[in-house]
Image (cartoon, rainbow, N blue to C red; front, side):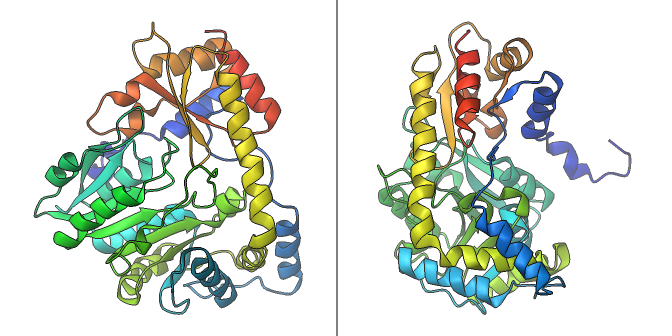
Length: 383
């Protein structure tokens, strides 16, 4: 690293996604590691974006986002969750959920502040906290059901804690936080006057067994919860990088203070297309959820033929599997799979800050064409 580089960067490892994607390309491997679809979302979305371009909607959008998109999101929040958000003062469109997370953390976390997150965590949480000068603290989601111990969470909170980060539906475990779990987190947040960042980008990728419960719907939590979501996940267009944040007006004002100096505004025609997308949710969602449930079920069915034991996913598009005996850890297993058998996975130990549980598992993504899933899992079956 360059001698002038920010020293905080030394505490942040290279993204495992970059590493495994590079190996997948090098070894021409079937890629079950990358966390995005290898197929397009609905064809009418690019058509709507192109139409917006032809109509001259090509200049900067307002920094907080175009009103039609925010209004349509607000209507969805009301319809599905009975949450009332003012699109003018309580909603911000961001350059993907990733920029949303960055803007939130940098709006509130200062040097020495502690931020509690559940491991395995999405790696951007840890990176954002470290870059802001904060200190990550970890609470482990433990196998087989990826539940946490309340006592461990209570001990993780100190007088230096400013924020708890939740991810539900959860990447990488596919866990859905229950109402009881969210209520226990809420009790701690309220008693200690903490903010809660609730990453809910997979909110519509659920499979019927359990329902998504937004953290902001828990009693006493709406004014201290900052909810992040993603049109890229909901509509299968991750490359468009259009996310959004819902929070009360005072919190939103602080977040926009960072957002305006980060990306300023998000691509205009894409926002107009997504505004239309949210107007089509009633007809779009059932087929979307059916498609992804079928892919999850296909991957589980194929995994049953291998030595890898799957943990069922109730949400998101990820499945965690226990690796067979004979491997020192997840990195050794993932390396053998990609280099010798031609299938890329993600070793999840990088998503843990204190527990070794991740060393016994791999993360797989089923947002793939059926033939990709079948080919990748059958290669894994050679172990």
